[in-house]
Image (cartoon, rainbow, N blue to C red; front, side, top):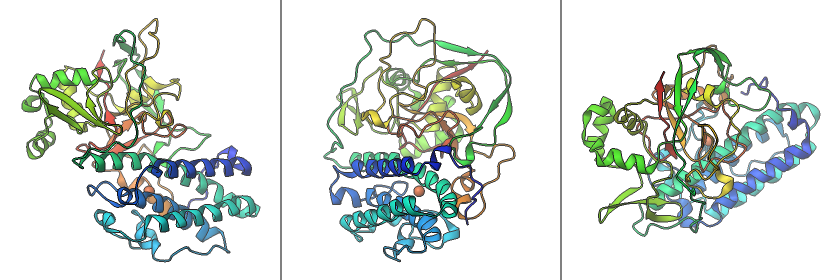
Length: 432
Ligand SMILES: [Fe+2]
């Protein structure tokens, strides 16, 4: 049921390191839920979102189902009913509770889910320390996948609780406002040019990557340029003021239909009050900050903005080639802002790509499909990514809610083009 040929990161040979990493990531998940009441943790605000409590349990189910059950003969299942409740989408491991009904689960209680987490964590620590060499060879790559999986759910917890709080008229704040350094002078946006030709993209190892990031392969690119910065709230406000949401010439047909159906007039979490735009954040509602990257736009809105600006979205290959060598640092979750920030770095001498990592996931013009010669793993774990490769678009670069150490230049996030609750923005591209 699991492809044991998945590459084993070298550091997983070191069990002390594996244990420390496991404990740190489990603790981080629990820290995200620490300020939430049991009521906060139980509610589901829309079918795409899940209750915090469900995320806390499901990430434990993953370790129980794919590591402890198959590899630890002494493991005692915490509650056999949880296999049904907390399976997300794995057909190969059995039936599951319908996703849109996760918010109806007042039981198990938040306390019971906490006990489930403790049970799985304790068993995993025992396995990490005590598994024989053969079992550890099997367990180590699954552990790495499970930890990356849990980090993905850390981001989902923040996305989902933000949506939940946004539909509460009290507009609760998840955390106190965090001040960020405003740029001393607005960093002048420029363009950075890239040569065309034959390039390579995709994961080449040796560290962990999801299966969808490979195989590494060649792509042909014509010369292009990318904007130095993501599109800002101030720039996006000009698109709105210019009637962007009322002018079909900028919109893909499917996008225009949704604008009509949903009555979209601005990004998700924007609200007009007394002629000013306000924005809901995880630190509550406040006026928009024009210098910060626009966030919570769908791919349709990103594409419409780009057309209005006379530009286009980059392809994922252009984004990845451009990002080659960019440090894996930026406004990520570990900074604690949980919101995109203005570019406060010192002005570079020459135009350079800024904020490629962190702040907002950047929509690309690329459909989420398999790379050439991609083959999902055999068995249940092959369902992790491969079966979602239709009707979604790729986003790159991570956001302010993405855990540090989780993002890679080759990382392919994906959402349906109408989706807006991820921390999604855009960067403009242009042909040369
Ligand atoms: Fe999951």
